[in-house]
Length: 349
Image (cartoon, rainbow, N blue to C red; front, side):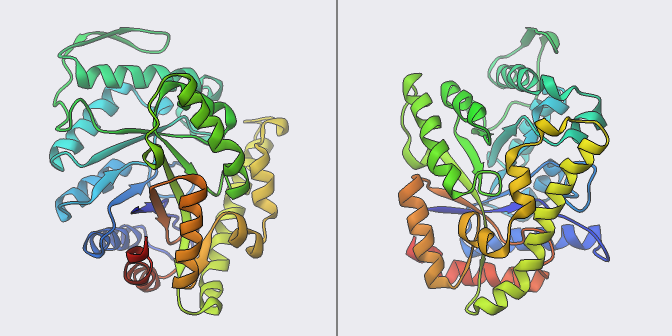
């Protein structure tokens, strides 16, 4: 089983953006030495309580020079918000800088302020996503690219550099809704799922939809390689200490997400009926519920047992560990939990 790190990187109160980035780089470099396989920051915009990573490729470029084997994943690039040729150039450049270590994670996005901020109609995100991905793959695999679509026009351009990985870096798509899971299955793309948006009960219902769509469309069954799971994790020998550190942090995350959508309704960016059901559920979630349905905050032995059940039930071979969900856990405690996880959990899996 492979393990990576997930970063959303909230920054609020007295926290320093400079220090938050330095801590993240130090954790990621240390993760490589501990045996973690990959790192996955996410693209987010306009809300420091949620994230200060509007440009995750810059963070990964810094890590490319500090690491040698760590896979550099993006979970995710918001394809509808940028021109696909720019994304193709930047991802290929990162692949060259890292000598072929990029994992290209993509998604449509769902936060209304991202779309209003960049002047992109959110209703177009599915069509923009599909068209942008088509252009990017062609830019990487063809000597010259031409495209005449609804949103993008490209006339016989040579996009350079080409990626080191051939035919291109691995592509993995974020999937939260049933509609997206089915679409990605039909297209044959490996997927990301995250327990804050698809808690364990929903995964039981929804992952078969994705795998059945893959099968119906004639795509090979790659088993656990098809699904990567982003999962809040914290491990310590003391459950009391875990709760002391993690409860305020994960509550901050849950309330921040719920607040983003409430604000969007107040600003008339979306209608109340378009607020995802999961957002209302997140806003009401207790510590006990979070530990049961979306997170593994436990002792090393209990963490091993729960991760074994996750692997067996959902058939996943890569877990992206979110050690600081909410961003309130001190750097020294994140490092300590990573070390304990690497020493007493990973060897059993």
